[in-house]
Length: 200
Image 1 (cartoon, one colour):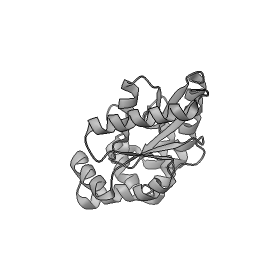
Image 2 (image 1 turned 180 degrees about the horizontal axis):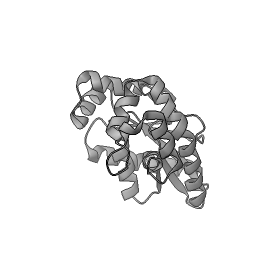
Image 3 (image 1 turned 90 degrees about the vertical axis):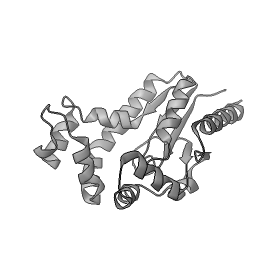
């Protein structure tokens, strides 16, 4: 590979993006995880923690001082305005941390960025996108099973993001995840192989 490559891995809720990122990590590639960064921002020692508690109320704080993510999730997934309030607090800070991690990994030839809401978030770096894809009906079924949600709850969570078919139109590469994990691993291996060949 003649130049350093940075590739965004994204998907929809329950399409298998985290599994894809884990497989890439196992293969030895650095992966910057925006969800991990976002969760870390809600730690009590972070500036964003106080802002989130002030915005959404003390009732989202658990007895140990940590934020109850399920309670916060219930608020923001059911109300677009509340979700936007949370995004205004967290998204700029996530983008800043991603830049810091990219700088730390600047000598790595290939780095993946696991960013679930890449198309929904402003201020993120512009890189080629690999979409971890499954059809919408399969996405709904997986989400209901994974999180124990009703169809109505699952559809509300899916509606909080850009639809998977719209993301498919925008992505530079589609990685199919409608089969098993072995098929996903092979698809990722092939995608990396082609990416390396493009860079030679």
